[in-house]
Amino acid sequence: MSLIGTGEQAYVTSSPLQGQILHHGKPVSNARILRKVRSNQHQDWITEEFNTDDKGNFYLPVREETYDLGLTQFVSATQVDVELNGEWVNFWYSNNTRGELNSEFGGEQPQGLVCDLTQDEIIINGSGFGILAKCQWENMPQSDTE
Image (cartoon, rainbow, N blue to C red; front, side, top):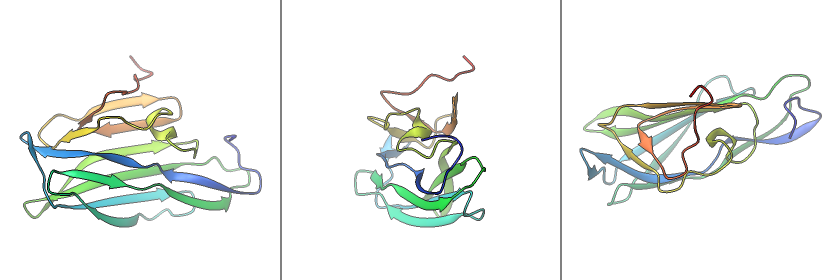
């Protein structure tokens, strides 16, 4: 897909994300998760609610939008928060400028994703994407700035 839209096209505004959420090494069980997505078409956050299971596992499905960007470059952002002890904690933020499946992860869906709310955030700046997260995964892309 080109960076410049031509006619009405489908864009992936948030690729599927699957993993486990921990707090001090223990699963964050049966917790509410909010995924907030915004893009060229929706400047305000679109919010969707999900839940972890009893082992802290979660799955967020793909989110797509179809529109005509004309000469505008595609841009989207995803923020994911989990409710812990009545407070919302951000553990994932990503953006991308490609609109393709997994483009905000550097092209591959994260494998073995584990997010520990007590760990420091990592920053990955890639070509057409960026990630700020309290997560680690097996196939983490390298930052273009390293």
